[in-house]
Amino acid sequence: MTRPLDGQTAIVTGASSGIGAAAAHALARDGASVVLAARREERLRELADAVEDEHGGEAAVVPTDVRDEEGVEALVEATVERFGGLDVLLNNAGLARGAGVADLTTEEYRTMMETNVDGMFFATRAALPHLRESAGTLLFVGSFAGQYPRPFNPVYAASKWWTRGFALSVAARVGDEGVAVTVINPAAVRTEFAIPGFGEEEATAFEDRFEYGEAVEPEEVAEAVAFASRQDPSYASEIDLYDRGKLSMF
Image (tube, rainbow, N blue to C red; front, side, top):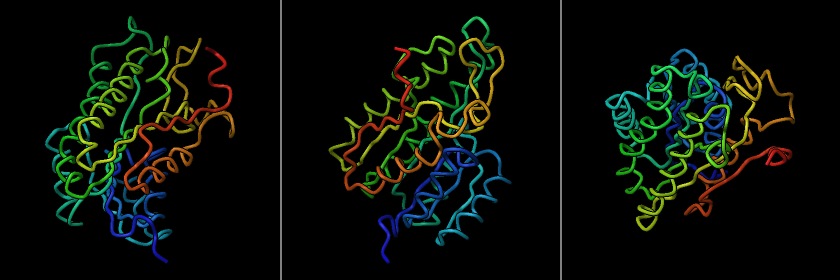
């Protein structure tokens, strides 16, 4: 049977766990060759084997730190050289450090901004010429924190407000050139991602903090990624994924 992404190639940043790993499976299930990018090479190789065993096709491993401008350019170049082009970029790599402004060190601040902001810029800049050529899809993992105030982690929230503003502004620029742009805004996702919550001094991994059904699952975000990638062009400029009680605090 023909699958909707047969013959297409997708790069997934932050692919070694959580949303990125689930998205790699969803894209490969729909027929795409996937290029897995993150810093943890061993995990990427395990994921590549699992993706190929379960879905067929190809899963390439390109260890990448998205903070490294030249490394990101090399990732895109390696993808195009191996597969002949690029159809989907999922800007997913991100992290959180610290809590309030007064408690955040300069090193933590810079690491977070370089990953969440610079990394998405570097990847988008490197990928856009190829996405213009393929009339491809550019995807960003934003956050509920990029839409509503986040008093207990304002710098992380600011990085996600940047993500959303950047994504929608890029969409306004390249939409007429055939490039589809979607930003996906999940609330807390049950992964190893950890951010201090209300009243917490230490960050707790969301997969430990929440029971199944209390937060968004990585696979739900992955399905939003796959949905947007299947549209021609994408009709979804934003997809919000909230658990039912999320808005009750506002």
